[in-house]
Structure formats: structure tokens, C-alpha cells
Image (cartoon, rainbow, N blue to C red):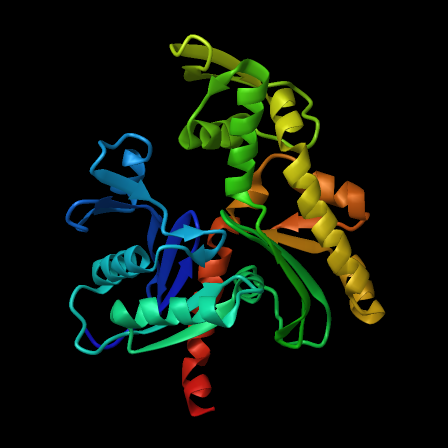
Length: 329
């Protein structure tokens, strides 16, 4: 295989890979199951996700990325190696890889991403900021001198940026996103019902009945957890109105962050944004009513991008076309 160009959205919850000329070729959870005694990787992706919270003592299913950055370097490297070999098999030349990162990462965190990808078999590694990749993926022409606002809500981080002339003018990144929503759901059920539920149950609740804006019709879902008083399994029926109560705080944190970015935006760009509206991307923006809540609080039209979950990966893929000019620079 000739050295391909690969774009990777290295997300806290999901890894999506784009190969130039082929489109999106891989979409797997960023979960790795490792044998603690030998250090061997037993499963990666879908297989490993099934093991979350269900492993014996010597096997640990972990997510090597937390809050959008690498928390376990060795496991991330092994995970990348596995995904790269799964995409391309054996390469004749090592591929060039573009990886997207949250907008406010430190130099140390950037270096960790570059080193992990290089050791996993990349010939050269390029980094792109998530909101810029998301804007390209949402089909926005970012090269023009006018303001576009992107709110990218992933698993670990929410990246908010005002983009003009191909760069971000004002941006912020906060560690409140999909994972935090799950945490708040777990905490709420524990506080209200004295029942402990796992991360996966919380995620199912969020996807099926979660909302942050009043629904016309209250929907419900049955879940099972462990009663903290008796220690026995117990079944509960959770309503979407309760989910709204549980998710109110993290949703408002995101709204406040959008607000503070708008406050720092130069007036000309702010005028562009109020004309064009705010674009939302990332899996986290699909939670019911988040667009309505943001629209109500800012008074600006809010749109969810077409393929919100894949926007960042698609944008990273489109940015691959400019690698040769980046190399010449």
C-alpha cells in the first residue's frame, strides 16, 4: 500500500478515521482492554467497550483519553497502532496522519499526541484544532473574512470558537461534554433514588430520554442498578423531565461559555454571527433540546450540522488536501 494520508478524530469517546480518497473507514469507541499482569492489549474498540465495568481483576477496560487529552500514553499508542494497521494493513510507506486536538491544549499535550502517532507508525504527524476541523466538516468556507461560530461538543471537551480567515479569533475549550452529562446522570440517580448505575446505563439514558429543554411529551425508560441500601439489583423508571433536572447544570455551563466567547468577539464578527447563526457539531450536541436552549439564551439562530458526529473527522479529511502545501511551507 502506498503511503496514504489519514485524518484521525482522536476523540475521548470515539475514534473516527478518514482516508483520502475513501472517506470515513473506521468508527470505533476509544476503549482498550488491557491485561494488568502482562500489559498485553486484549481488545480495542467495540469489543473492549462491551467489557466496560464487566471485567475480572486482572483485566482492565479503560479509556486512554480523558477530557480530550491523552491520560494513558502507552495504551493510546497501542490503540493508535491497532487502528492504523486495521485501516491500511501493511503500508509500503508509513502514512502521513493529521490528528485533531482541542483548541486549548498545552505544548506537552500536543507533544504526547505527536509522539504517540509517530510511534504507532506515522511518517509525519500534523495537528489541527477541533473547532476548525468541525467548521470545515460542516461545509463552512472558513477562508473568507467573515465570522463563523462553531460549538463542538464531543465526549471529553466542548470547543467553542469564532473563526475567520482560516483561524480562530476567539476560542475556549471546557471539560464539560458528553462524559460530564453521564456523570451528572449517575450522580442524580444516586442522590434521588439511592441507586448506583454504571456509565453505560447513564449513556443509554442520555441518548434515549435525555433532554435539556422541556419536551412536549414526557418519555420514560426502565433501567436497572444496584440499590445502595439493600445491595440488591433494582429496576427504576426514569422520565425525561428528571433527565432535564439532572442535566441542567452542565448544559448551562456550555451556554455560559458560548456567552463569554460572544462577549469577547470583535463587533464586526459578532454581527456576522447574528446574521448566520451558530453551528453545532459533535455527538454531544444531539442531546434533545440543547440547540433550543442555546437559541433561547443567546437570541441567535442555532443550527446542528448535517452529520454532526462525523464533522470533525470529515474536516480533518478535507484538510488532508492541503498537506503538500503545508510541507512546502
